[in-house]
Image 1 (cartoon, one colour):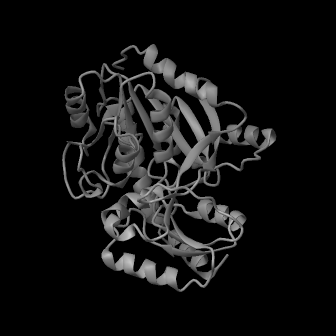
Image 2 (cartoon, rainbow, N blue to C red):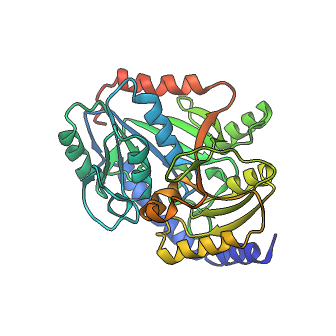
Length: 359
């Protein structure tokens, strides 16, 4: 463990009293909801929630995209997100000319990749859902992005994500750990997906994790690994592969870049990194610094690589990016143990057989 990691871990342990206080508040809130002192709104409409119990890095955005690709051929669907770090407030529906500053980077990513799918944002989902249904009168389902811990709305179908290397049952409350909700809340999920697993995960390890998660009899547990696609140029969409001859400048501001860095170690000659905070808003000075760092790399085969989430926040500089070898690396969930179809059927069946349960 390096010094920075040791210092961070030690500092988080010192904050244990604050974590205990935070945990007590969360448990009290959940108790109030469970005992009906606080009420969740239920809608007579298919709502699919994608969320987690920890902060950042479990793969919520790729899961939302997976669901869009799965459901779009069969149903008229929309997505609803909070719109984290946007410069606006209230309900908003993405339209032509909408920017990431107006709706947030992840909703903007959905809007750019799936222009035929309505993408909305709203801090108060209980208010935004009726607006979205009114604006898109032929909707058949809504995907709620990162809404599991927001109990003022009760979704009919909950998909809970937990990262292989940081299972919620082995975590602790913020700020000592990464949990923003108690792990007993996982019982509200219909499906639990263990994400970012090794591609060669064994059946024995799978069974141990299932035991560790303490799922209920009715819950189904799935396992996914990260699958990277071919990088494409940020403005021209021209694709290229990553080879052992390439030296790469990695530019990213995401919660957990570790799997991406491990991927580059295996597939590129060398990579250099320029990290930013999660949801970082890029400035023209950042772009100048990126160019300078890239020009310092003395190699015949070199390019800049970023994530789709970061690319959304870089598109405002498209006029300056045409002649820069800046490529975007797409990422998807790949289900292990040939269980993808079983997951797909669970989700599709929920919409097809939807029945309203106000309780």
